[in-house]
Image (cartoon, rainbow, N blue to C red; front, side, top):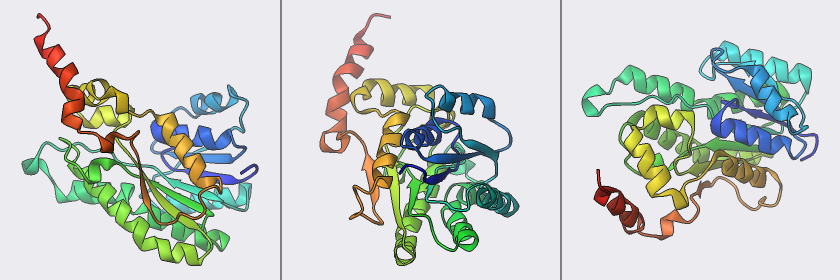
Length: 265
């Protein structure tokens, strides 16, 4: 992977930043995007410099804006003339308050900025560089398959994202690339804490803590998908969950929950 070039959208915090760092540890030159100046590029670059890694380009680009996408592709072309890895990680973490609060406009916005960029960016990359990336990774979550309070919009977007992974697989393979969905249980990030209520966060990260994941674990998984060691795989959505799917969730968390309820006030 030494000397390859990667683009990670939503790459300046949380899972995106962890993936960028993990790729950089393998000698990959990264470009990280963020939206509307919400992150300090100096702090992000310092995290790479602290490990003596290739310092990333940090570019403000709204994944839902076609003009921003074109400027980003132009920058990548001028700087590197190629793109080997694309990680579609950016997601609008919109919280809902149940059926009565849902709005079509809000759903459309989440889909535009959380699911559609997987296709739009691959189209823009192919148009600019004449080929698709060697590896495309779409970051998803298990919210597409489970109910989590307040997660309606994001779960819908992740469902669409995973469908697009399957829909794009044949075209991308025919053009010399591979695509994956990389799904996870909840990871303790700023986005998670914006969407979920504090008691839900505590339940997932503390009571079910033996199976909770951190962002670097997602970075390691992304590296494996890009390493060439898994080249027999293509088009799958892979769930990273530390084996939680093989146990009964209720039984596993019941003892700590009971202990907390029985503690004296």
